Length: 101
Image (cartoon, rainbow, N blue to C red; front, side, top):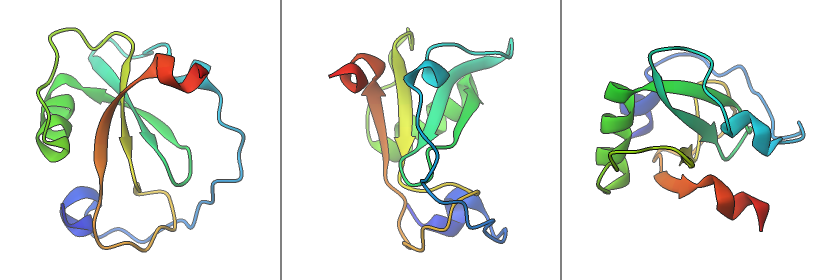
């Protein structure tokens, strides 16, 4: 997937992956319309996504979207907040339990 298709044409805020990632950020959803958490592998930002966002991310990840997203999150190679300069975005659907290992 092309970076501009994924994050648009916003200027980067040049966030760096220097914050400590806490797996607890992925364990809950705060908004009623949220279906899944999305974590940037580069800067460790975590945002919540709706069911529609989850469907789009599943297409980008070339995977089927499970009926139940409990215990799952999407990991992206960059986001609108980070300084990753790659032209291609990778998206993966992952199990939160794998982070504990």
